[in-house]
Length: 153
Image 1: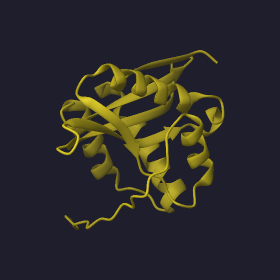
Image 2: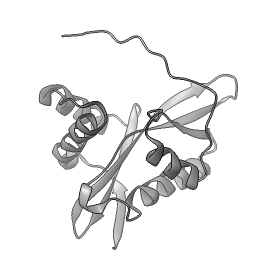
Image 3: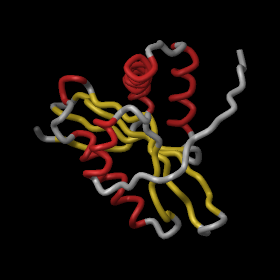
């Protein structure tokens, strides 16, 4: 399969939002509000200061995506890229799409003098994804993610 990795564009918003809904359905068993996810994708695509999407294309069709957002680490005096919104179309899984997306992001991050690392969070029970990340050179950490979310509806 011949993949092309490129920066996502405004015209990709509908596909990215659909893929993000696929992530929510597969990992959390629920659908996202179309207006909210649509707006969220469009806002990020319009303002790369908050993050960046890349997409993988095969035969002119988007088959995968990856998003990066940014964290400043005062401890390390550098920026950490957080991988989020990873999705690969079901027909293209286990064919190296995510690995290609990850390697692309890793290459860009390693060349940026301000970037000191890449992180992501993964469900504790998703051992298949964890194995994939370890095989790409990532390491498990001792940290757990905790959150307080605000209902803005």
